Image (cartoon, rainbow, N blue to C red; front, top):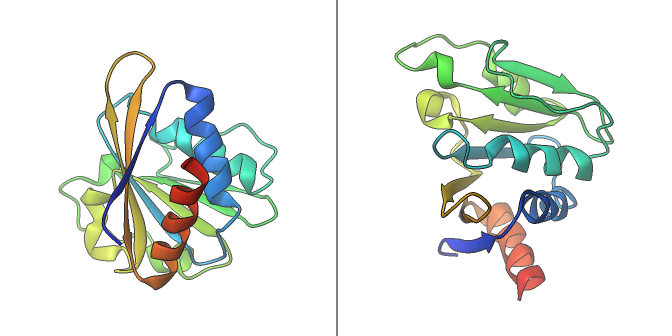
Length: 154
């Protein structure tokens, strides 16, 4: 499947798409989030967390790199921004091949550690409220998930 894009008009709509996506996620799934600061990456992660049954408040893991949340499926929320120009492996395999769903912000900084099959999502700000969210699935499983999102939005 080629890339699929959605335009959302509010934070709530962005979270709603992410919550829907979460209904298809399973342990070992990897979601990468790309976009400038303030484009909706953490907001999207909050929606995924809601869909996974996480009760704790989701905040950006910028200073800890990885935050773990318990839900119906564990959520591993990573922010690789501080790892730019670093070759440090912080044990990514334990997360990517563990019991939970990995959501990686700024994944381009640690791309060599991320599995080839994943769902890459890119965010672009149109204005204060609107965002373009582009889905780039790699692998049969992620293509099927994006197909579900596409049907949901049509």
